[in-house]
Length: 452
Image (cartoon, rainbow, N blue to C red; front, top):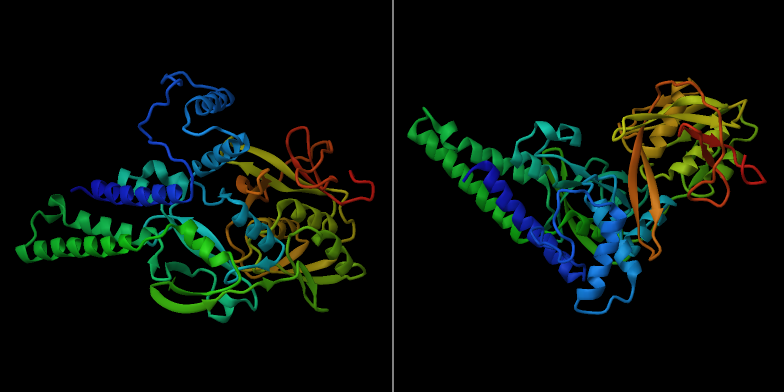
């Protein structure tokens, strides 16, 4: 069997497990080869709204049970659309997962006290989606397999006490293998090396050795698949709930570590001032507390470490408290290849001198905050942050679920400052930022009257 065929066969088992989990949880499934009656196949594109309305009418007429809650259909449609993006930064969460996510953003952690991310790639390397066009079909299939990785650890939480560190990634939870791309890549390589094209000119001994290695890899992968759970299920086990203990096997580089971690709730203040260092997390209320902490100070040190899950709008408010008005770069939307100005309006004309403590756990909103200040030499970075400069929008759905959506990436590249037109924030009853006529983003200091 070819490497592509083997990988596709393996992934069909993975997909079958995914479907089984959806069925067990009551989620509907559709056969990808099915044709929905009433919606005829056509090369002509159907507007999304018309397609959705047609599907709702179809379900009303033909589903085995009456459709009594169309809101569930709408939420299900959102979940399907977000999942179809195959972007680890854009994730649908059910009500329980979304509650835990929002609590963690505000500094309250359940489970073992970690922030986890789905990293996409093949084998040990990390492969970005922009490289997909250069990959063969088997690599393309494996590209959709994530690796469940620790991106931040709650100070004093269960994971830190057990010695878990950012960069560790999960191999097993409670003796269940967590699907990841490393064994798939290793098996694919063994199959390639044992293919006829790669065996030409080799001795019988070397040929036997390679064929035996492929059989061994196949047996090892089959054994893992027999105990497999999906990464999302493993994430829920590690981040939801405050009781119980978990046996977890972690990768750290090429080494495996086994830990027994007891769950409990961990609390981290969104702003903490010990007199010399201000720890800052971007959650509701942070801007007001930050203003109080820095009032009257000529120099400050901000700790932005263990800061991977911050609210983008709150980050904009905090930036306006510490930065003078002006342009601080652009937000680039790769899909449309457009840049929008990243601008502070009504900022602080006399900011303090700043040192920002950063490391690989400084991601997303916190990393944009640090880079924006450093780009204007308003702050000195002590440490090296991650490469994650993603703008993530968080959307609440009516049933308590929600999703994250990656909408752009920050760059310190300068663009001319546009005229400002205030708009209301999507996540607040008072305006905390505005969009310009050309779509640029503007940070604004919160004023007593609401809009600045």
